[in-house]
Structure formats: C-alpha cells, structure tokens
Image (cartoon, rainbow, N blue to C red; front, side, top):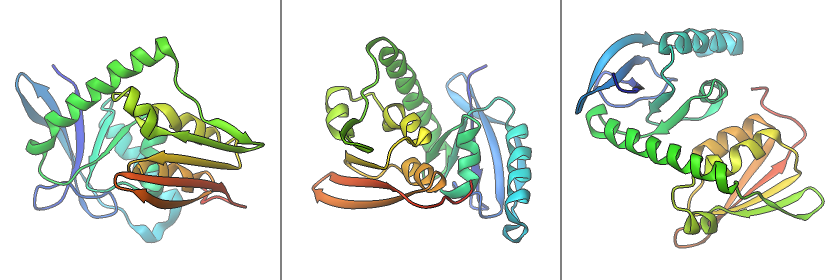
Length: 211
C-alpha cells in the first residue's frame, strides 16, 4: 500500500477549510490511482473557545492515524497550527482531489530527497546584520537549490523565535510563515519589491496569540 493524503472537502467535493463544516477524507495510493480509505465529518463550533478547538483537533489527528499530509483550500490560524505542531505537512490547494493528489505526492517526494541532500550539505541560516536583526534571501537560496523549500530553511528558526527582527526576500509570502509568525508573537509586514519578488519582515511584538 502507498502513502496516505487527507483532505477536507465541502459538499461540492472540492477542497474546503477546517473552519467550515465538511468531510475529511483520507486517500491512499493504490497502484496508479488514489482510493478513499476512511472519512469523518468535521464541524467546529467557533463559539466554544480554544479548549474545544484543541479537543476537536486531537480527535481529527487521532482519526488521521499516521497520515501526515493534509490538504485544505486555505490554511491559517490555530486550527492549522495544531496540525503543524503535530508534524503534518499542510498544503493549500483549490479543486477536486483527483486534480491534486498525484501532484502533492510528487512534490512531497522531491522535498524528501532535498531534505536528505540538505542533511549532508547543511541548511543555509539567516545572517545576523545587527544584534537580534537577521536577514535571508529564500529567492537566492532556491535559485541555487530549487528543491529546497522555505520550510526546510526557516521553520525551525522562526519557531525557536530567538530574534527581534527577520527580513526574508522571497517571490511570495508562504502561508505557513504567516501562521507561525502570528502564533509566536511576531507581526508580519510584506512589501513588493518587483515582479516575483517581495520583502517579508517579522518583528517581535509584546504578546502572542496564545497558540
């Protein structure tokens, strides 16, 4: 049996979000196709607070039972932080599963191969320009190593949060950066520098969202 991929789907059979009622379907690669192997209804009462949210997410993660790839139309906030914290690879894609499952699996394999290569060569780190102020160009790094993802380079650094300010040059703002920054008490400001290039600046704020 092949690897599994989970997706939250709306009534139209297209990818949805965890903040909307839907069905979480787990697909497994079987030969040249993906087959649904289990599913569960998912609906969150937003009025019941963070404790209820975490309980529902714990239930969902238990249902996923080893599946570590999750797909939604959009991903942000505490719901997706819980998935990230549990070690999930979260993808933002619109459409029907038949259109994106094979693409995701292919990209996941590329990331795995890149991670193995990075384990040998080492991951580039942000440079400290001044005490507590760091800079890194993801755009330049990926120009040299296209298979290297922004997560591989920056996620651990941002999650450790040992900086006052971090400037990132990239071609777009990765959604996971917005989510991790918010949940670790950093404000985020982006500025378009030119075609396919922007500056993203994370700055430490006085508090966090409590994720």
